[in-house]
Image (cartoon, rainbow, N blue to C red; front, side):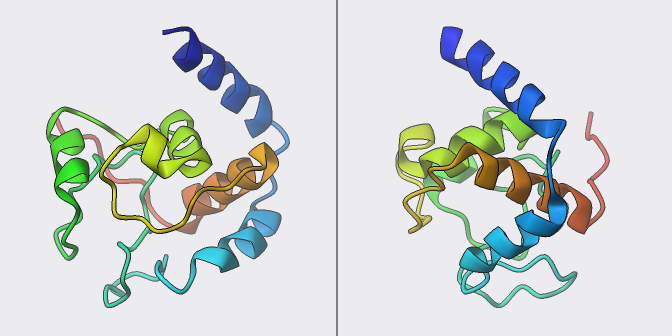
Length: 128
């Protein structure tokens, strides 16, 4: 419980200085597996356009790991705070995830990448 609250505060403070242009440069580490271009769904990882606010494991054009599908079914939505925790250490945040990247160590990198992702495409509408 304390970690979640601490993570939320960290992300809230970091968001104020977010730099989406820098985030796009950091995101270049991800382009071998992910895209933010609408309709580009042939890469090894899911398309991340509109990921902020999306329920985990629900992009129809991608085969997600059972761990990610189950997390989404339990209600995991990709908020900034949850993306920050996931990108810091994907396996620790969600054991069984198939993402091969070990994580982004630097909080500023995560903050800026999340800001870039948030600005890269439409945020999906909330589902009831």
